[in-house]
Image (cartoon, rainbow, N blue to C red; front, side, top):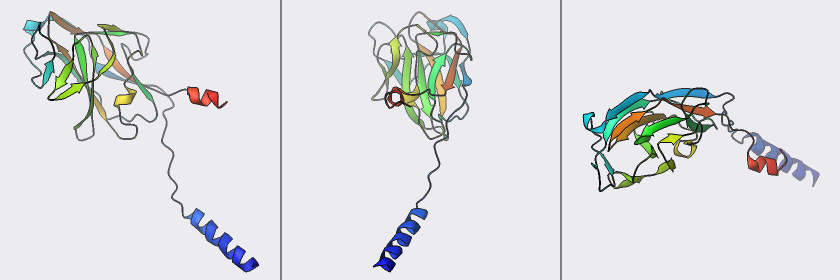
Length: 195
């Protein structure tokens, strides 16, 4: 009986030794702040020549096809377990403002759109038959870190974030906007477990 137990123990140990070791997901140890949009002063909507023809605003009072105020795009990034938030400066101490809204498009490394969101003061935004989800409250101004984009971004794949400021009535403008990738602190779940 002893040789059989020894054989089973050796067999079990060899199976455990062959288990693929999955590397831990890298985590960010410091904040990475990336410029997303430069300040664009107020301009009359009618003076903005470029339109975003694929976007439609659900409004009865104004032009349904918004005009482009400004655009910006990040380099290729990775979330690495971070929270992704918007602010008006790299330090995350200043808020930002926009009139009417920022269309945020998450791109893969080949430039294909993975996800979209809209932040600002706007009625429903549609691209084709897709309704674009609002990120944050309906407003022209936001506190630093108030707009959290983490749920829009892929956790483990590289991505770019493209921002297009769009306006459909009155004037269009945007203050500087930065994407801040911030290390996550201990979660509430960790606190409950005593970690």
